[in-house]
Image (cartoon, rainbow, N blue to C red):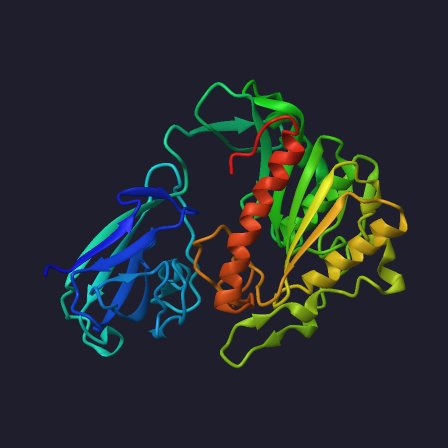
Length: 396
């Protein structure tokens, strides 16, 4: 029989959609290798491999079949995507042009232990799938104010749609750690989003990670426009760079760069560089989250090697309890690292950072990290729909 490899939905899909990968036409009880590969916009190759046994019907369905070896083991329907690894050490898979092109992922089937074979071996079957970061009909609108400029992504249709600010790194990339953070810039961004004719509601949501989550927490605290905030692996205080908002000025807890640690494989561990938020001398740098009128969702990885993010989130939760506030929720994921991203994003335990000459440790373990990405993505969307569109229905 002809061996067939299929990934459904075939053709194009969004990166957070699960792909059903199936093989047919094999002899019963045959060992095969599956490989996924893509080349990013900088020409770096990412690959993953796994070994499977076919069943009595000569089929392999990744929904229920367990990988016996390779980059992962056990039943992981999206394991080939979650375990994509760069050919060059410490590179992280990032999509730079989300509007014009997808990632094209090639799936290859080999009738051998391909993990031990020559790259010149020809696959028995192949399929290429496109993974997009925007849905058909999404528009990108450039926005520019007196202090900020950026891109607003609008869903197809007339709206109105809930407004959301994403501070995953783009707004901070040119600032560096030593710059003064002026919250009025982010206030202007919120006002621009709220003022767009296709944006409805009385408030804006914010989703941010790492240093961005620190700023998002300050936005939730001081800006009345912010009604729903998702902080992914952030802190509870202002670190490294001072925060200013009108007449308010919060001095930062200095980074203890003398405490940076070099790990055996080379990447830096930033974990001990962050100053102690419990020290008496640092209390003036703590973000007064009890002033927050909106809702906050903390997402933390318990194996975060960049921040002690679980401890910081718990400090905020305790501070809210002391002030009788109940507008905070904490989701904590054992085994998850720092870079908790949408589902299907490859697990990245360490990578280069634009701020350092050596790569940084992010931490985590592949399987629980992937599970955290899948669960938290659903929870984030439910949280935002509920608090930004209380009368609307969830899209999930």
